[in-house]
Image 1 (cartoon, one colour):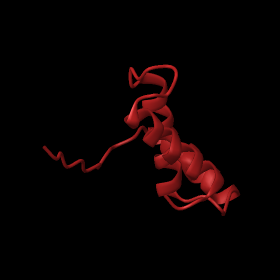
Image 2 (cartoon, helix red, strand yellow):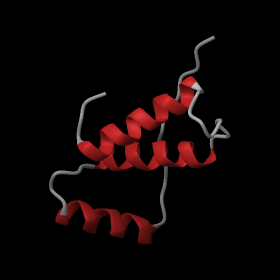
Image 3 (cartoon, helix red, strand yellow):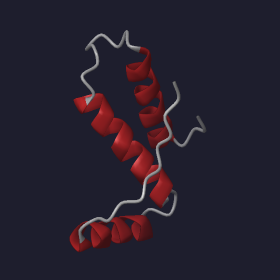
Image 4 (cartoon, one colour):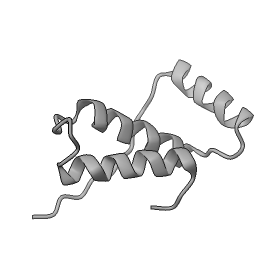
Length: 74
């Protein structure tokens, strides 16, 4: 079974301004990279995966998170 996920989200104005300011001062980051890093970190912290990382989903989320931080394509 395959699920499709599409993201369109409204964020608070304060968060939008903070993100805009961050992106202006960090030209090597873009909105997609920030959201990918933030979402993968959230899933790592709250996904209910086993702490030892044996879950395939845990490893996938960790890979995306680290790739986002270090600008590697995944």
